[in-house]
Length: 540
Image (cartoon, rainbow, N blue to C red; front, side, top):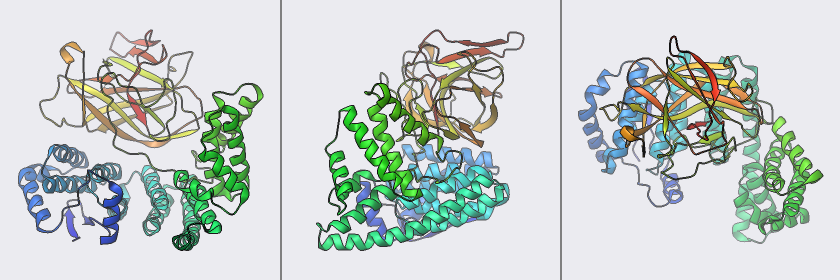
């Protein structure tokens, strides 16, 4: 593939490295499956890029401030999602990425590249790493240092788990430099731990490569199966891939344990026994691998606990609690390797079910907390100078909230496909007897662009058919929430413009929602809702 050097307003010179190599491009396309197109290059890309510049040239030239560039990013993304012609669509994604880069916003850049990677077999991880390096080089003086460091840490983890150690090495240096700029001892320790993990990954990867070569010659080699299986399960946390290998291991204990799990125990007592066995194996490992095996044991403790009683249930719950208390959510080592969650969210169709059970179930495949909007569930007006709403939630383990995603609609609906960014106030409260506390523990005002989703409201009278928008914002500093702690979140629109309604999610326990009023002269304290309505938001 050809490289296209792109000069971006704001001083960033970024190389559009579409695919890392021909071999990796083939690997990406093969793993992508049906539906992904090959990235566009050469004269086809140049022609499509000129068309984008012709149509959006005025918008590109007018985007001077970071806010304007982020608005341009979303406008180009929306056009890309509607565009049917592959070359033009790809060019729109690339120009959207350039706008986010020029704004110096790593979060928006990563989300754009993820969106593009859903449609094209590009080297998404390499593109993200290059973007992070470019932003750090060009805009380090104005970066939100803590959130930038955490995002780069996520790229390091993703690279290690993807066995892309070249990218991990590139990013670990950026993470270390960014962490030092924060002067945050926890972040500095985390960056140091990632560097140590990378060294472990180098050694483990070499051993794994040798074992894989042996298995290609002799798939029944028990020693090679054990090395490859431990690397997949204990280091990468890829148990689906590693368990069949461990079932052919030379170690009789590991072989028997993997075989038991592959049989799929369903009785709570059998699940508890399996969890106990993995817990014992974890204690024999070094810190990093111990954490991965403990996390796997926790999955079985969680499955078993629901059907256990008495001391057996108490034991399972204590193991889960001890794991949560030693978690890395507040930067405590050993900084477990966790697969990143997607930045692009979806809307549940009318009558659909939510991504989590009511009142705080955590879904590790989605994020810290997920309560998606449902098209026919309704919405509530929310304004900092009018009615305000809050929703309670709990997270199963200690959590570090870095990003909030929320959903709503405008009234009247904007004429433009892509409305201008709106100002919102995000607040978190402790629980005060079933309602939010009088004063928030954290309040932050954000300017959030509106990203169009595929959802439209149903059964809302005059608001029926209104478009549901997604909004995202990174917190200035991570919010630490303890396991099981009841917390309330409130989101309200500030500033001028159309009124905003916060979308509802699926029904939950009564009292999950609270309302109040800040209308001048008509202020009302928080009061618990008498229905089962819940608000739509996600935490990352």
